[in-house]
Image (cartoon, rainbow, N blue to C red; front, side):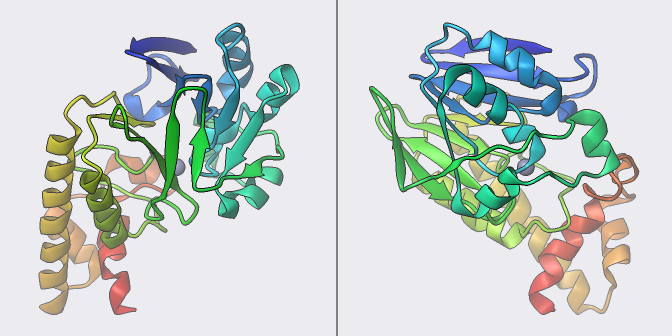
Length: 266
Ligand SMILES: [Zn+2]
């Protein structure tokens, strides 16, 4: 299912296999001045292709290789002959069959492999220039796009909320802090994340997210330096493991957050 909402010149396209499920099961792409940012999951790929008919689509960018951001690539290329660009580190992965956990297969589905072109330092549309900003915390290939005239910041999966309680096993939360600070330094006026609503006061949200993660990282550090193992640190800080851990085969857990902060000691 697809729903779309205009935010000035930016169209938010919200995609979900299960419309009644919680927010974690939908993802957003954005269409602005002919540029589509991310192409969504497999289950809505053909619906997105049909939705974009006569919407002036000229080109697309994948913010990273995850299956909920690339799966309509092939359908859009076949239907509209558009170029799709992705970060250099993502290209091989987008071009090969994906290997998914059961929850990913259930919620997003398998992407059809597609051939995409490497992103340069910026993407030019008819009216705007979007700077490509590497933000490797969510995954090594991840990028954000920033349009300076309007202060538009497209953050892919970098920003989820001001108080995230879970993360993936390979995320680096100290790097997340660095990436969020980099976003703050741009002084954005609107923020367009993939996993949540459009944010009209991004500086306030970024400040909160940075303060929360900084405090959390320092607490994890302090408990670890007292000799506490990661599992006990997780219980001490979060009380209990998130339900998402079991539902996602431990791909999203609070223990992952603790371990992420402690990886610097390995
Ligand atoms: Zn992702």
